[in-house]
Image (cartoon, rainbow, N blue to C red; front, top):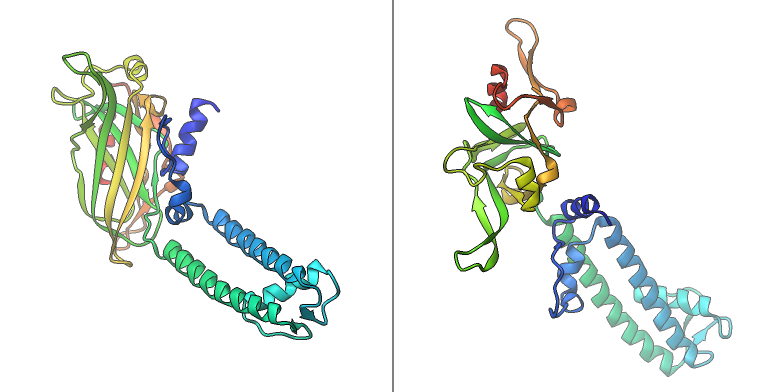
Length: 309
């Protein structure tokens, strides 16, 4: 798997870690609840369906241990035993087939209790999965560095994909970089990037975030080559309150050296439309990911309006 593919996996599955752990106890088999909640929805449906089929097959085999334990079932028929188990597990009620022996009635009792516990567990897990608040925020694929108000500035842009607002939105950007202490000890350090505006009372459309690369910036003196050589990453975290759910939602994205475009700026996505007295602000999301050349020494003045986007 190439480095670029690994990065795509990390962004689509942010819970996964690119760190290889040696000598660490794997807890997946003891943390099935967390594992289930991190699965994509198609995988959730697949796991529930597969476990349901396996559970019914297990009880069907138990019914076949004693011959003629199910009335009106074909002798040694796995299919009949399976569908009898489905009816028992789901407490549907029997038709032509019903338990005929003491062994079968005891097994029906065990399976009924198992079915009640299974459906209670699945209902709770699925409800938790669908009730979790989530932010639908789109980030630009690239961050750009261009001149802004006379200072080289790192910029990235976000858009709220929903029609509601994220209240009290706050964004943080952190630089991850491998460094050495004065004693020569290697370590990964996090440097918070100071943003021009890190807080917004409401986030409804788009938001361009700025970090000035000045004397106090951890990015001061960096070049595309040095950024790539140090294997640095910029991690962005957005948090706010969903106005519909009244719960805190989060979104995260990561930019590495290959995702940063030096000497570029974002295309303008805002324009005024309409006649006098009925003017509207149009947001052109078809240009949301577009970037334009903008030498670090000369950025068009109209790009200063990008922060309002």
